[in-house]
Every structure is written in C-alpha cells, then in structure tokens.
Image (cartoon, rainbow, N blue to C red; front, side, top):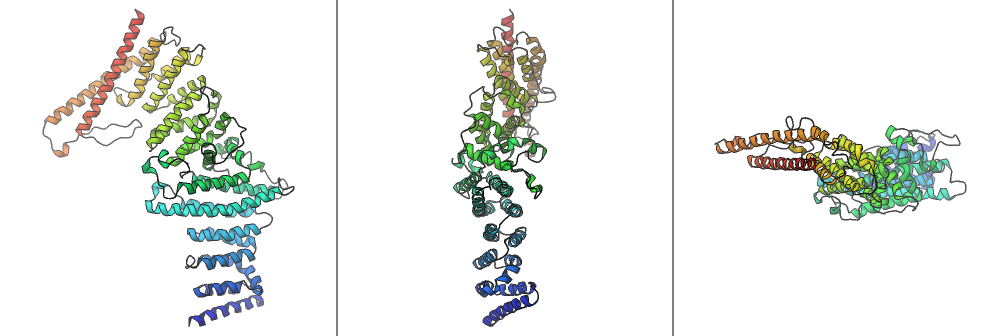
Length: 622
C-alpha cells in the first residue's frame, strides 16, 4: 500500500511538471506536488533525484526559492536533515543566487531553532559564491539576520538556569563556528577580489568589506561576555561566578579566527583608531566622518548611501578587539605607535567595557587598561588628556567598579589600577583629577583613597628640589579646603561614622603637613585659622554629638537586656547604611553592640588625632 502511494505522488509530481510547461510556467502546482512528496518520508531521496534530472532543471530553477520555505517548515526537518540539506544544496547550485538568498533571508526572519538555522548557512554560502556583481546589498540583508540569531541564543548569565545556560552555550559555540566558516569564505573572496588589478579602490569591494567588518565586530561583542583569557578563570573572577560549561579554549579559538579574518581585511590598525576618529559620531549619533578603509559615497554615483552604511561599528566589540590585541596578544599590530597614543585611542573602548556590569566584560576593561599603563612612566601623562571625556569616564567607571562590582578580585584590581593611573599623570593632572573626583564623591572609602593620594603628592613636593605650584601655596590650600569639608548635616542630622574614612584621611593629611612642613611651603600654617574654623571646630562638635548618641544607644541596649522581654521583641530597630547608601537588615542586639562599640572606637581615634593637631599647633606658636 505504501509503495503504491509513493509511486502515485511521484507520478503526480511528474504530471505537475508537464502542466508547468503547458500553463506558461505556473509553478504553484509543482510546489503543491512537492509538498505531497515531502509528506511521504521514504521518497525524499527519489524526490531529490527527480528534481535534479536534467530535463527538470529548468523547473527547479523557476520554483527553487519557493521550496526553501516548504522544506524548512517540515516537521521532520531535523530527523531527515541530510535529505533536506541535499535539496537545499541543489537549489543553491541550480537556482538564481539572488532569489535563493532572498528565500533564505525570509526564512531566517522566523524563530528558527539552531539546527535549522545552521543548515541554511551552507546554501547561503553557496549562493554568495555564485553571485556576481553587487553582493554588498545581499550582505546587508543576510548578515543582520545571522547576528540576530546569535543574539537570541546568547543571553546574560543571571537570567538563565545552569541547564539552559549549558544548552545555550553549546548552541552559541557551534553557531559561531559555522558562521565563521561562512564569513571565512566571504572574506577570502573579498581578499581575492582586492588582489585583482584596479580593484583596490572598487566601491563595491569596499562596501562588502564594511559589512564584513560590522559582522565580525558584532561577533566580538558577543564574545566579550565570555572568558577569553589564557589565565585560569579563577584568576579573573570569583569561582562562584565562573560557568565553564563550554571550554574557554573554544571561545578563544573563535576570537583568534575573527581577528585573523579582520587581518585579511587589513583592518587591524584601523579598528583600534576607529572610535577615536569617530568619537563625535558615538556621542551625537551622527554619521561617521571616516568609513572603513575610507569607504565614502559611491564615486560613480551609482547608488546613494543608505541607512545601514551610516551604522557605527559595535563599541563593545571594538573594546573586545583591543583587549585581545593589546592585553592577550592574540594578534599583532605594527610597532609604530607609542604606548601613550595607544592609551589615548583605546580610552573610549576601556570606558565602554568598564561601564558594563558583567564581570567578564569588566575584567577585559581592567586588563586592557593595565596592559597599557604598566609601560608608562610615572608623571609623564600630560594633564591635557583629561580634557577629553574618555579619561574622565575611565576614572568614574573605575570608581563604580570599586564600589559596586560583585567580584572582590575585580574590586581590588580596580583600586590598584585606579591608583596606578593617577600616578601616571603629571602633577597638574593629579591635582585636576583629585579635585574633580572629590567634588561629587559620595563614597567615604573612595574619598579616603583620593585624600591619601593627595597626601603622597604633598610629600613628594615637600622633599623635591623643583618648585611645583599645584601642591603648594594657594592651589593646595584650595584643594585642602575641599578635602576638609564635612558633608552637610553630619553630627546632628546625619551619622558621622559612615564618613570615617573620609574624615580620618583628612585629619591624617592635615597632621602630616603640620608635622613635615617646617618652612610653610604649603602655606597651611599661614591659613590654619581658616581650617580651624571651617573643619576642625565643626568636626569636634560632630564627634561630641555622635559620641553622645552612641553612648545613649549603648546604655539603652544594656538596660533593655536586663529587662525580660518577649522573644518577638528581642530585636529592636537599629538601621545603618553601607557607604553607598544601601540599607542593611535589622540587627540582633549583640550585633548592634558590636557596631556601637566599633563606632565609639572610631570617634575616640578622631578625638586623639584632633588633640594631636592641637598640640602641634600649640608647640609651634609658643
């Protein structure tokens, strides 16, 4: 019975071929007949053979692109994938490459699973190879669909369970491998075309290269979220944050392949400089002033620029590129740039990487920055570099990493790099960045770190033979007044203890200068009365009030502990906040006492330093 049915659908197919030739090439009957054949799984091989018969190739050429959708939508596509792949390959080889490309792109717009998507890449590669003339237009149609599919299977770690993440990472790795095979073929064709005489400046070839560069940098954006380091993952982020479900080597290998393709396109140096050249375009969302390899409007006037050509390259992808080249040495660039120039052109990329919240991306930003500043001598980066937004953004992002990053290792590394970066600036630059960051710094720990750096600069200046106006005289006094500025309401309206690091830093800085500056090079002695009025007197009052409040709360805790209370009332309301203002849970009485005792100890330390400063001043004025 099945054999009779199989023979019947094949006869119906051949009859539809005859009707096709008689009815002025009406292909709908053939498509319907093919659909009936596909419903009978056992004749897929026969169906392929019939469609490829020499006498039927004209029909296949006419209806081939319509069959793509029919094949992809079959329920058994994954089960009989080999037969469907053969059919798609035959369609790609025999039909109009432009029509087949349109048919494949149309199917890629659907939510395809990974296996179907990967199967479509082989015929897509074939039609691109067969195309002649303006391929770039079809690149613009196909590549965004490919990138969209990659984005669909790549989602942030914290939004997935471990099992779904394992599946997605496997899909991502296999998809990237297959897409890179396709892109490798396209890049090779572009490279071959560029070698032909008079083809180097061909606008079409440049447009193809531009589309390929966009795609490759977007793929690097995806890899920016993965571990690409040669070091063990535990060296980059906390162990609990690592998800080595797909080997690091596979992602690193894919990154190397991407960089190799970009090298074939001769884009290595260009990509490093891209954002610095087009900085205004990124900030104002304008058209780039420079296109890849100087791609501009078609000089022949054949076609105007369209919206896709105005798109900028992925900033995150370019940041990952810079990390791979300069921090991981995955590829090499000509040794023609100074290290300071490399820092300058990579500042936008570093700021972009550090802006993210994903630890793997932050790690790349820190490593890229560290790989550049480690070779720069201290005090040699000119302050003029601070006038560009890139370096200021880097300092702000480093502070955010130091405060908010979930990885302790990355927080510590950010703090180390932050201090190193400040030390690379010239004296005026150190002064400018310290003043700028202190102006709106709300985190006491960061403020304490900045004040410590200021103290170190004053120390170097006091024992230097060279005169420097920035950490002496009125410039320093102005900066110290900013350092010695209590937050509004501290002591009465606000607790002083959360500001301990800031206050202790300011007190230690003042004490050090008063002890070391015997000749009043800093003019602090001359202006001491101003600091006494603006800082020391209000601080003494704040310490006194805060200490009374803490002692009162401590006594209240002690008294309540002696009285019998219900278990439900065993905890009293006592809320404190972390330095960044985040409230923490209510505490047990034991924990409260520990916090109160710690606060009282900090207040006593402040009182000791205040008393020491008073002694220093009194001994000087005797």
